[in-house]
Figure (cartoon, rainbow, N blue to C red):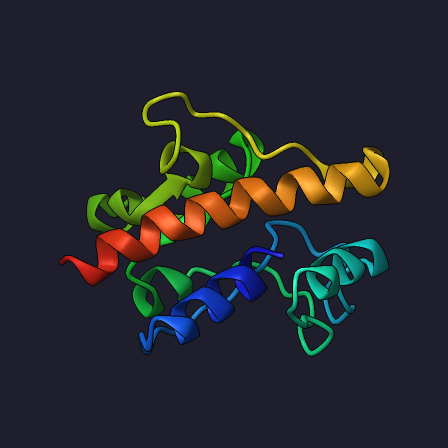
Length: 138
């Protein structure tokens, strides 16, 4: 959902930014987003059915300026893939954008029913607003 949210918000601001989303495991490689995630995004005026799961790769450190993780486990897994201090500095937990220094994890919406997806959507939308505002003012 994060990629779709960021993509739409940056487009509305006329910002040309490349976004990509991935997991640290290979469980959903090649798959479409969860149907409940797609329904939640559609309810909010967007579309993510074109996205396919992929696994994070070391080359992402070179390709992207910012790397946001959703929870502590993924954060640790991404950081384990590099010893490069500049690469590590790119990695941040997404909710630290709206709740600085708390290292809050985005809750897993898969176990929270439809309301779980709605809550995660709002968290990610707020974080996207904060990140894009920072980018606009750099």
